[in-house]
Image (cartoon, rainbow, N blue to C red):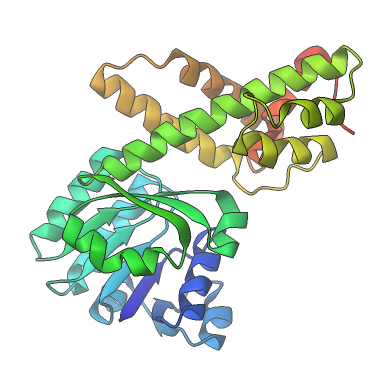
Length: 293
């Protein structure tokens, strides 16, 4: 099986490496900054999405947002121009569910299958191949590519039809953002009251308030380490998709709207490329109290 991989950024680069390590033949863009590294591992180069599609049985895309996915797959020189009937396109980007459905319909007309398969876990889990992958699409296509997805994730779940993967990711991103905000608010309160935040973390992480988010983000907060695993600007993008989708469905999401304003404020203060754990900076600035060891 030959896999075309488009989008070799913070997440896509290590995901592509894991596929090569698993023994898959990869075709990637020769224009990518990571091409030299991946070609050294055995990846073949191609000059366009059309070229990648013509050489591939499965195509994986990992791109910033809906416009990029639409352009790379449906645009001039895009995947759709070189795709063969029976090919499966797996978009692992986090985009608007409606765009997933649009792209899926266009590819179906060419005899190809489409799965939307966004991921959760950030750069660390992309590197070690333990992402959570939520998939929408045809069950038969899902079963065919599941072994491929399992080389990039420890959890691979089919959640419904095309678009369902991205709906699930939007739910995930709402929960993660609100969880970080709650953690931030609570730990700023504890620090302002004079209680050691490390002791607070040790005391509550094993109880009902404990979470994967807390375990991942509190150590970063305590170290003042906001090196991005998942950037604030990307979380803004995901929450905008969540707000747009919710509004189209008539679903009120007031807490999502509130944390979106927090993220926008941080972006304006220069934290757009910081890890989303920097949400704590918003609360620190309000309380004039840092949360550190």
